[in-house]
Image (cartoon, rainbow, N blue to C red; front, side, top):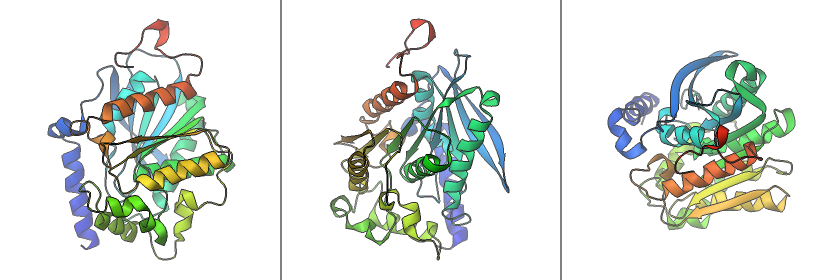
Length: 310
């Protein structure tokens, strides 16, 4: 496919994922949450943000910055409304999903720069966004998990301080060794993420001259000092071993890291709750993890009321 064909196919897919009809598969947003779109101006670009806020909580809340999947060349923030809105209500927190720039027009590392710069800007203007700058987490699925992990690695050195990272079936290795994991062979023909799509992702998103180790969290020399991590994997996913190996490395280097593998789940399952029953228990696990680290002294909504299905 030419670049123009990729862009046209992406735009069609994103319109479909954002449509009311897609809610049958992608899930309905939580009714206790309001969703607003706004924009943020960063040097040389303006990004759209999809902001999920609990309706009945008015004090400053923790901030969770979320990154959708799509292989760096597809996907849209709206595809995660079910997950992000329920996390906003159940944590509670302000969950901001970033429409980062996409390949082939904007290859790596530009999506990662969008992610880091957005987190830094939101924390700098915490009062304007109504969030607590001392209670910040990042979350991402698939390629968005790569972005979240890389944002956490940069924030370790440059700030801001993060309390947690939730990595949902993340891609952690975009080097030539990416196909060498056992789960890649075992699940190579999985329809949700076939090997051909993974290789296309690498070709479209990594420009000539970029060292793939710079966007492969598992290849970093040191992972010490990172915030606590929850790594969620799916047993039927080609990326399963990339996630589990990353969790192993985090623990080996002293990071509080938990690995949770869902046996009957496929790649993207937290974006398709209408198809994969495992999405609901996984969502509860992610919500509990974020709540424990962003609200360490409490587990419910203000006044002692607890959101249903917490």
